Length: 136
Image (tube, rainbow, N blue to C red; front, top):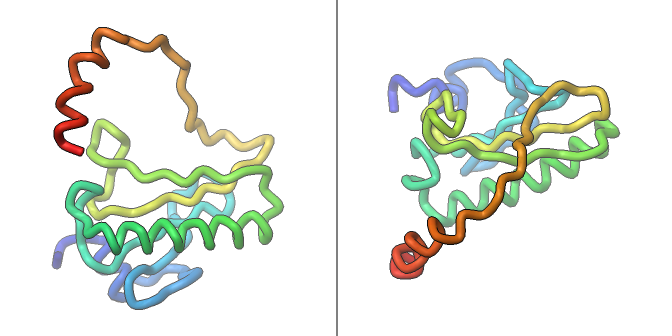
């Protein structure tokens, strides 16, 4: 897409610090990182979210995310890694080109990717169970 910033980055039209690149994805450091070493795996083919991307490309991007996570863990000495991918504004997606965050985690970082555990709504789950099974 001509107006998509991640399409432009993936094509090399906008400069970035590239950690890895192949014919399907480009991995860059995030310019607004949550922590030191925060990287993004960006598929070169445009898809706004997980609902639009081809299965094979999504699988490849996640395999690359694992490799990047391993390399970042070795390079930074971080204590853990978050790998996440947001779909929709309400889920925290701000760039509508699917991308996978690889975020090194440190004891003293202030990246807040946590939630307060709730209680399971059994009645609510029963209502969606049949629909989910039918779709799958």
